[in-house]
Image (cartoon, rainbow, N blue to C red; front, top):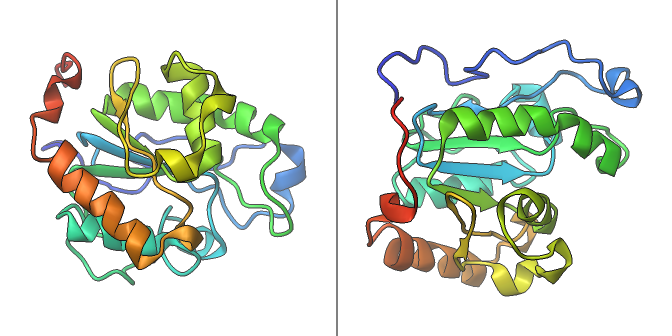
Length: 211
């Protein structure tokens, strides 16, 4: 964790009263920005806050997949608190989403994802991660547009799960959606992380900027 960081929750002070997506303003409980170590080498990107994450104000917390994904990073040593913690104790990892507001009746629209892009792009720029973990096909394709040379429609999350994809300046290590994380698929991801990512000097994937 950065020695000067005081808060894990929304550490960059992003707009908590955002009204850029009018259809979401009346249905959301709150805006949920990123959470974690601002000096992280690993950035985890989902689609949108779950109901539990919206209640907590923290992405990837609570039921609905958050605890499942957290458990993976706890196994890898990045989460040091109980999995049901509403404000996890994390190191070297930052959790965020493509969009920051939850609609209770539907997934985010493409326009809403595009409207939220500046938030995600700012987090990526300020964190400067080595490894990005897209959780699900939609984050994988969204990141592919900006950060790889492959066409977005060339990605299949089932095939790309627990592999490494070279990006522009960092690497992508995709994970299937939390509801698809069977014990077997979770084991595949953990094995790849331990043997192909953490076992080598992943910091050589790009030149590290001074913080």
